[in-house]
Image (cartoon, rainbow, N blue to C red):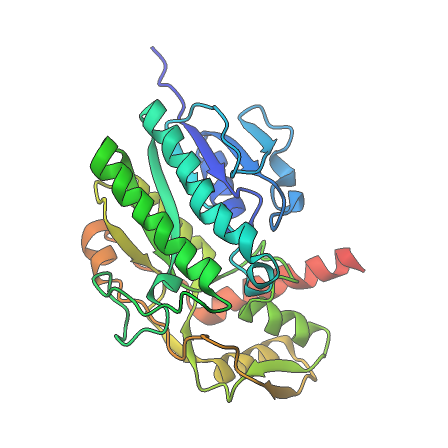
Length: 316
């Protein structure tokens, strides 16, 4: 008998990470159902698959329950852009709680494996550096970022409870800063901001003095990590990201040089609750998944800049 083809449900599949994941799954010959309400996702990101027989797209708000069957549920739906979750905090909280609850119910009913795209945001203003999975975090529950940070924490809590009470087959990826093609030029995240500003020769807006640090993982590496985690037997939260730490001001200067931009760097006030340092420990991912990112920042930025140059030409 011919081998059956896996059915994958990808929530938030028209978004940045979701669309890159779908590209890999489709190229592997699997079936994909993409669910997105296009709050932050874009049809442009998945347009090449729209008429493919193994691909289906459903426009749906995950806070409303629905019925569908899939062997694997990749739960990536949630605005990750600070601009969007500041603008729509209640919708962000609802997506994190109700959306995750509905996906876990679907996994329970259909005996599906489910992977939650959690976030390094669960660590908040971390007092442990680099951040390790056993660190419980320091999050402000009454701040501008709480809808996202506390939202991801309750999503993880729901996964734990469904695992404990219903024996659900759960995977949890704590995703650190990721960049690459299919990012929305207007999403307000640091890499997309700097590249778009540099291409347009606009001022590069650095918040604070730029001495705060981040670690940037190229999306191809991140997707490989997600797939490895989904296919593994590891059922506790796991960091996925790049260990190489970089000052924000250094990233800004690097992008200006790579673009060949005339942009000048300007400094704005640092947003409240914005962590000063963020870098993952990926020792556990190396041990459990034999995974680590291998795309050099310069190589990844070159691909991302090329994507944004094409994207901005389309928008003109």
